[in-house]
Amino acid sequence: MNKIVLVEPKIPQNTGTIARLCAATNSILVLVGELGFSLEDKYLKRAGLDYWEHVKWSHEPDINTFFDDLEKSGDQPFLLSSKAKRLYTGVKYTKNQTLIFGSETEGLSENIKNRYPNNLLTIPMVNPSIRSLNLANSVSIVLYESIRQNS
Image 1 (cartoon, one colour):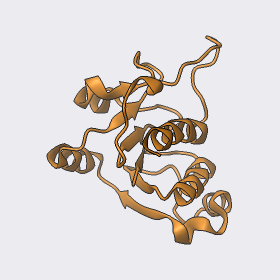
Image 2 (tube, rainbow, N blue to C red; image 1 turned 120 degrees about the vertical axis):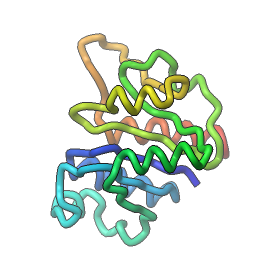
Image 3 (cartoon, rainbow, N blue to C red; image 1 turned 90 degrees about the vertical axis):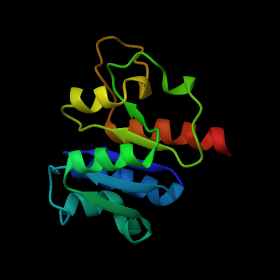
Image 4 (cartoon, rainbow, N blue to C red; image 1 turned 45 degrees about the horizontal axis):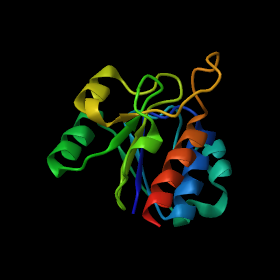
């Protein structure tokens, strides 16, 4: 079962859309750090529709605790960054891959990226005027590549 980790997401509609994606793909959703919205937010619920009951999710409020525990587990996550050089299509995903995405406004901090320098991936931008894709789109692209490789 894949695990989608959102570090400090800011936009409830994105998180709701990703929750719905996690329900559809039987993936786990982990929200890490301070959220830019309330978990009671109507936009969060609306984007996830009535699928929230089908989502396996949790919220880890402390970023350092989450990443310390992740390192202790021995899990080798992939982290997505528009600044990475390695393409998301150029790696082999495991059946239980952890995929980590940063906030819509700031991405992942340098501190987090420095913890896993060999695990940074990017989705290529054909148009150099575009900085990045929407978070929910990015999660969809990479999650389905993992699923494709392991089907």
